[in-house]
Amino acid sequence: MGKKVLVDLTHPFHADIPVWPYFAKPKIDTMHNLSKSGVLTQKIDVVMHCGTHADAPRHVMEYEFDGKRARYTHEMPLDAYYGDAVCLDVQVERWGLIKASHLDDACKRANIKPEELKGMVVCLRTGMHLKFDDTREYYHYSCGTGREAGQWFEKYQPRCVAMDMQALDHPLHTTMGKNGGTLGMNLIGNSGRPITEEYIEKFGIEAYAEFNKDTYIKTFGLEKYMEAYGKLENHGLEGTWEPCHKFMMGNGIVGVENLGGDLDKVVGKRFKFMAFPLRWWLGDGSMVRCVAEIDEDDLNPVPDRVYTFGAL
Image 1 (cartoon, rainbow, N blue to C red):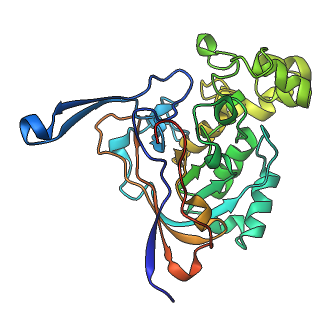
Image 2: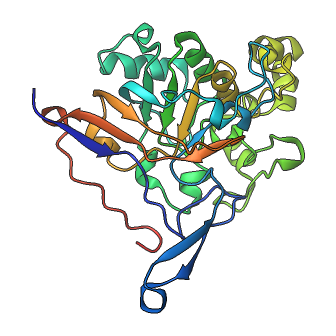
Image 3: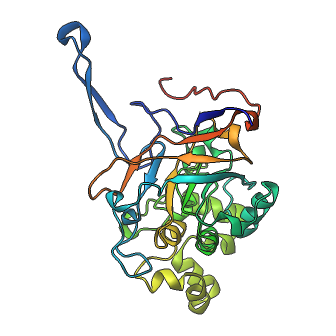
């Protein structure tokens, strides 16, 4: 056994950090500086769902599936985002929806059985972390999870799932598509047309139906929709709006979005994962510093991550 080392799995934070499509960039102001005041003091105005950050159940639902009020950040145990971990290499096409088969395959290649994930932290490496930037490619066209992956996590019960993507759900399961009622943006893609139209053109209407309640019912019928999304609908939730978030959070499985940094050094490996949100009373989530503790001899031989986006 070699010595233990720490690997940073966090994107760097700065004023020009890429942010989700309807979030404002952070505002960083210098209140005191060394030349005038003898000290450097800065203040930050920022949405906590910025960069590498953790979600608490209260972020997406009022009640968890056990009927209890969904927990805020301060109510989560200290080890909610901490524990024995594995980084799964999920191989999925561009803009693809991650399904149970992708996760089963990733477990097989990591030499771990899905049943062993109970109580662990699962990190998903899709390669999107290497595209982290203020671009459509990172946000609009990301691969991502959805209902089937959420049900897979519900079945195997990890304590936390940390993903290297823009959210715990595929972009079309979010308000970037047509979900969230009046919040639905149906953003414009590279062709100048809405991304929903582009997706249908590429993958077909039946594939797109997974992302939109009305389309699903029109395509497959209400009975099939309730078979797929009934647990969420019966819980008072819009089924196709961030279903992976809800299948996770509703079962007390917390999540981390925008995992990054030197993630490639631990792909396929087991290690100790650490992330600690602010002790924020009534918080819905928090920016976090994610770190892997791993045997030095077990690291993948890849160079340190170099960031070139924005102001860096």
